[in-house]
Amino acid sequence: MTVEHVDVLIVGAGLSGIGAACHLRQECPGKTFAILESRDAIGGTWDLFRYPGVRSDSDMFTLGYQFRPWTDPKTLADGGSIREYVKNTASEYGVDKAIRFGHKVVRAEWSSETARWTVEAEHGTEKVVLTCSFLFANSGYYRYDQGYTPDFPGAEEFTGQVVHPQHWPEDLDYAGKRVVVIGSGATAVTLVPAMAEQAGHVTMLQRSPTYIASLPAVDALAQQLHKVLPSRLAYPILRWKNVFVLTASFQLSRRLPGLMKSILRKGAQMQLPDGYDVDKHFTPHYNPWDQRLCVVPDGDLFKSIRSGKASVVTDHIERFTPNGIRLRSGEELEADIIVTATGLNLLPVGGLSMSVDGREVELGKTVAYKGMMLSGVPNFALTIGYTNASWTLKADLVSQYVCRLLNHMDATSRQICTPLPPSGDQDLIPLVDLKSGYVLRSVDAMPKQGAVAPWKLHQNYARDRLLMLRGSVEDEGMRFSSAVPAEAAVVRRPVVEAAG
Image (cartoon, rainbow, N blue to C red; front, side, top):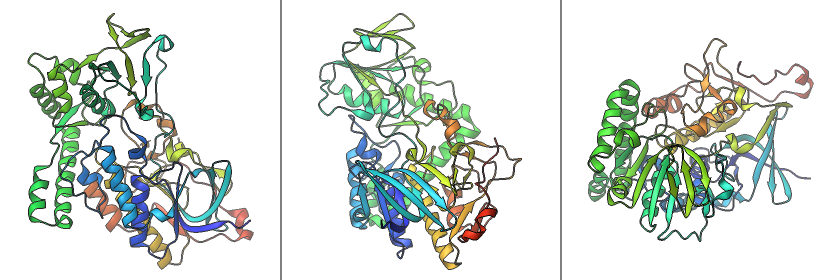
């Protein structure tokens, strides 16, 4: 059987995977590549999620690609617009022709003798095998086929409909009905005002509050700049302006959390009815950015509350009942539809299992190098975006760094780049450092990060640009080599893992 070989195999045709392919096309024009996508469409997250009001929770001037300006002055775009942006980018750069839909990558085995990955994918009932010199995972870190729903006592007794946002029915009719949305994260704060336009009433039921900030739906500076400047000049200005705002917000939260708490509380209080219990419903016990900050365009959530079309209840669920949900306080929320906006299941690298020279890779025992490669795993990169800023800011940097690595190996006649772990005396922490429930549930299975560069993830775009676009490719965290001859296999070093 003839096995097809490509220089770079990209896993995933979402925002990150399409961006990776475009960077390869521009910066490594001589490299062959293919994109394997488990679903049947471009867009990833933005094709999967179809619930009412689905939109970005990062501004589009940083969520858009660095190389292709987002030209709409809309700050937070709807899911359909983002999906079209990704599809049009793929078409414009000609990378859509490299996508193979319905290919779920399940296994990858590295051989140092050949300096190649052998990758197995499922295409329906057929097994497909390819080889590649570099494997680039752009499948995000959550499970696409199943969202997270806790085991609610009495759930089988509820006579209405229960829906998870990740699997939204196209024909769901909620007009005039009583809806309870369980959750307080980005999905919940998007759903509530969107459903409130048609529903009889929407209640956001939360166990604890989330920090919520209002953002103008349209960027005033973008409107002005687009009147006097072409997009290619306006876009970098808008992008850097928003990077500065995001960075300043995060740094203020870390250094003066009390002040940031006060600013966010005051912002919510100004948009809620007089006498509203802001402390109970909109003042979390944790510090800002310990969990991701939610943003709402033009304060739409607050407007829905002021209008009486929506309300917030902060309490614990005791059990589902035939007519709704009974709370620990004794109150019962009646509902026709319950939406469980209760989060995601993490699935690092899309559930792909890997081995290096016959030894299985345990992701939880690896340390991330520059937030994008794994100790002891050669010629492999994965994209994990920022938690305190736009995903694409980091995705662009990762793709650019992969291109730098590939070009550097070509220039120095080497075939293998293997990240090394930090010294054993460094403290290791989870790579994704949020305290959100969906992260904490799976933290042991995630790669770790170290205390200093190049193993520490700074969550700082400007600093990472210097490290990844200007810093040396040859450093203490990377070992370059070439294929190991078969006769030397008996002395080959095992996969290097982090201690603990």
